[in-house]
Structure formats: structure tokens, C-alpha cells
Amino acid sequence: MASTTHTTRVARSRPSRHGAESARTAVSEIRVIAEVAALLVIIVLLIAIPVLSRHAKTSSSSETTKVLIQSGDTLWTFAQSNPQPGLSTAQAVENIAALNGLQTAQIPVGSAIEIPVSPQSVELACK
Image (cartoon, rainbow, N blue to C red; front, side, top):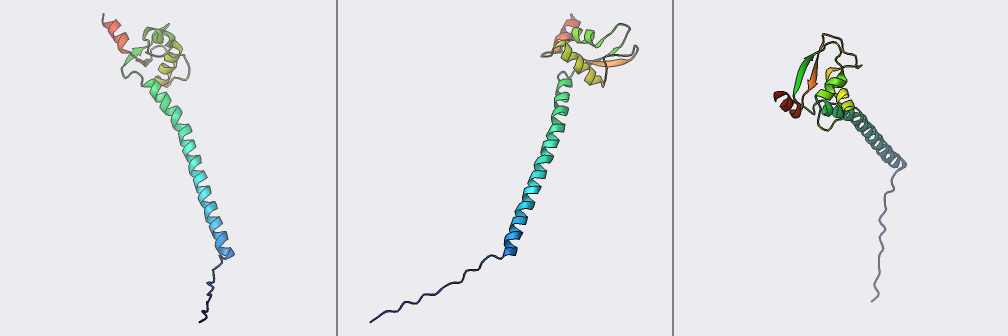
């Protein structure tokens, strides 16, 4: 007995050109959205990092004291007389200026400014 083999061909559907273009367009749109999102994250970080670091500098000491400016007072003398741990005198001057929103080192006589007070300078003042 001879056996006969029947071969059945299954027709494969070919993707239409329209479907391939649509898939490429969807991938392109997703890529653009991802790039825009990444750009927005970078912009937020560029804005947030300086703001947070400035806040960290000004809040390194939670204790402050209000000082009435007299003739001859400078930010430098306040920074020297109230040392802030981990900061040089120049950095402490910048910290005092930032804390008070000062754009220059000139302080009008009679105005009041906040000076950060470290626990060390409080102990010295109490002795």
C-alpha cells in the first residue's frame, strides 16, 4: 500500500506597509515623549540643586540672632565673631548675605539683620 502525503500550505499574512509605518510612527512618538520627559527632569534638577544647596548653607545653623547695624559693622566682622562650623569666614559672609537677601556687602546703619549663631559662639557668649 502506498501512502500519500498531503501538504497543506498555510498562507502567512504579510504586514501591510501601512502597519509598519504606523509602528515606526508610534515608536518615534514614544521616543520624543521620553526625550521631552528627560529634558524636563534635567531642567528641574538644574533649578532645584542650586536652590537646595543655598538652603542647606543658610540653614546649617538653625539658631539666629537679630543684630542692629551700627557704624563700622561689616558682614566680615559678624562672620568672624560668629564662626560657623565647617565654613570659612568668606563662606560665612556669603551665608549671612544669603540669609538676609543682601545683594552687596553694604549694610545700612540702623537696619537689622539675622546672624547665624553656632552652639560654640552661644557657649562663648554665656561665659
